[in-house]
Length: 318
Image 1: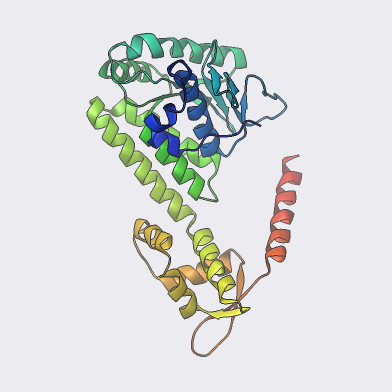
Image 2: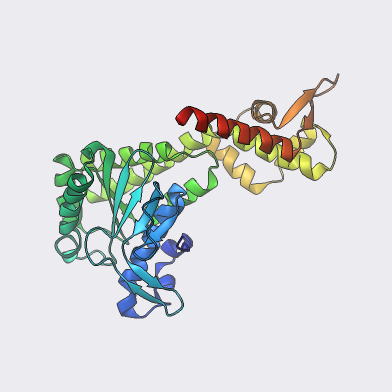
């Protein structure tokens, strides 16, 4: 498995590219983009030298890298990379050519033939394959060209570096995220391109789509998040039984938790704690006259239950 590049490099692209000679930078960017897709989908990253077709779900960057010598060899033909997710695929195409008129003609026109060839070669339905385009910034001609193709039925996702980084950070922070949830976002981004009225409005629509998806995912994970955060407070307390008021006090000191609660739109914190610990079976309620007390489970007990559930699902899937 290929070692992944950090998503922070997308947000500091000049600093990242400055580590490499100019002729190595396009390949380094391709590798970075494929790495971020692998991180977002929680899949292993392979390259042309390490590709293993026995791994069903993976991200393949079609280039080669010599990390010790800092040498990148970009993909010689076809798409830069492919993400083989659960039930669908994404062709990955990235370019460092920024907001210039030649971006469409020299970098992206060929992507459409890569998409068509992929559908034919793998016998994939159009609705199960997406074309993901990544650049520091898109030019008007690129937007115009791909919007037309989107209207013709191509499933096109246009992501500038900051948007891709945001998706990856959200994905990394949500423990229960499924590739099905990422597909929901991807479909939304395809729709935004088809319905957009201008490049400027499209950029705003992409940001809004990602932000709304994040809130949806946070709400979906609410019980898990509050359960784990409350369990963490209980663990620090050092006793098996902890009251809800002490758990709430510990949570209020956590800045990350404050940001989460704010994005969630507030709510009854005591109820969130109770729901998270009980529903996720991280603790049991101990009856008490004044307030709810919780007795936490041991980590080994929780892990054992999780493994039994995994085995049960695997047996059904056989």
